[in-house]
Length: 287
Ligand code: 13P
Image 1 (spheres, helix red, strand yellow):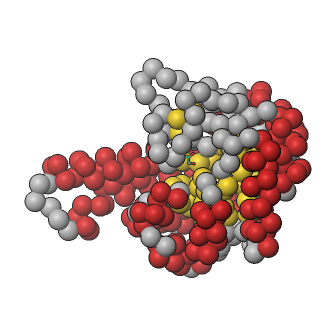
Image 2 (cartoon, protein in one colour; image 1 turned 30 degrees about the vertical axis):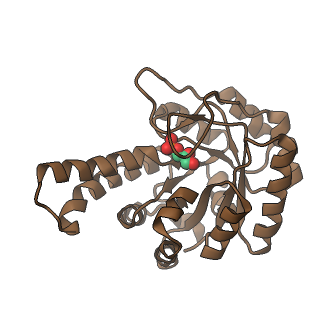
């Protein structure tokens, strides 16, 4: 079942669970995530970053759509960190059901202006829109972020959502993109999240979902977070699985021999995150 973000997260918000948004950058990742989501009877968000679609090519989305349309679990295909109108229109043309326009490093006024444009365009064709306010940190990931976190301002958040009519808001409450280096311990500002949530009536998105304390992530779901973005926690185990297999089997070259360990590791992470976010078994709520 193919859903847009608004409809998918309405059910999550009403039932106190969140849906993980997994970045996919290869067919094996797509296949493994879908197999695990179906096994767990859990809704899932598949997100593709502009760098990822540049690498994979537009035709990849046809395969993602085929999986979604033939699946018994709800699936959203989402553009992660669209930076330009080109990124957004390309995604809509490719058949994504949700787009992010990330103008968070621009001025507040420019962020509102570009987001409004995207909302008008996307809503006309039933596609949901996510925007970002504040800037999350960056541990050296290509997904972006700032050296210093700029925490989301609740007054601005309320004004921004009312002005733009977006469907979800990504906030900066202490997370960073990428894996945390040794000694850097993230801390989510749950009090700030509560304040932002009390001003908004749309689901909140947590970016930089990898490497955060489980307890804090779980708590964030109780205070309005409906979507948690996860990339590094998946890619790191997936590619480590391939690396290990190839190092231990120097002459191996058949994909059906190389990928199984990586796929199994990836599925373990998907299972763990789905349990953490309380997503398991929730597909049945969508009939
Ligand atoms: P991580 O790589 O930290 O999981 O962040 C992913 C993300 O936020 C994508 O937008």
